[in-house]
Length: 170
Length: 212
Image 1 (cartoon, chains in turn cyan, blue):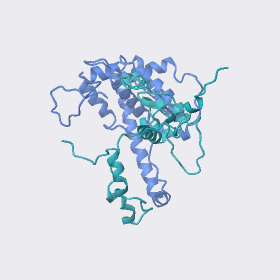
Image 2 (cartoon, each protein chain N blue to C red):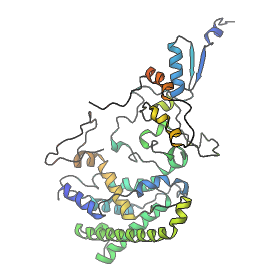
Image 3 (tube, each protein chain N blue to C red):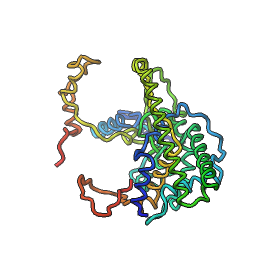
Image 4 (cartoon, each protein chain N blue to C red):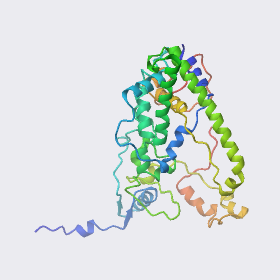
């Protein structure tokens, strides 16, 4: 009989992160960089840099519907079609809503993709510093709920991730 | 005829505006009725009719036209796969109208007409579309005046998303042609990787519009 006496040690982690998206991905990166042994679990496929960007270098005429969705896709993706990003150009990145149902008592638009990187691959790629003025908006106008935090609470994190203020292009 | 001139004619055919009706079908999924199985939506006669209509809208000029660019089969495929049954029916009825008008005006099938005759048929269809659109808009506004208070309170004001055959075939002709290899690279200027953004460029004589 062969036994791996180190099996338990090999499979023991300081942290197990479930999901490699914009939150999980960052968490795993931070923990790993701090020297922790981290296991990152992701249910979706791996998208290999460059090699798996199947549509990136296609010409317009190589897209059968020129980017538009078919009625079949609209039927199988009733949630994903509620906003504009799901198109023929990136159709493989989005979940099939029929296969991934959820209960929606109040409308909840859940845009999802299952692959390494999760929604960090599908977001709008812009993230600005919100100013103090914005955090005070609700209170000032007497609407909705006052933000529980102010700019000073986020500022160190903005600095940490180097999120810049809007600068005029030179 | 120069390509530029042909394009001016296209714009004039329907008041120079492109509507949102083609796009709006994307958001009508909730009302989408079941498709007619896998049956072909169009007969081969209808598909050649579509091809000839598109080729009348964008004919051969200094560059090849819609027929050469395969726009006919493209439109047939798009109507079948991307539109709800209601729109498909509007489209099929529109094709029949083109045929009927060709027969009553020139006693022949549209596909057998001369270029001049085809233009006349499509011109009449386009004029009718403009007329119907205006009438529908008037009706809609009268309706709106009646219901304004109710609608505003309920937030149920509706926009006219009615689809018209000619508008549909014209939009799909333009889409199909200018995103085809011939349309994008010969009628337009095609630059696959544009590189840096230049905000202000002087137009040179004969500068073509950029492809997508």
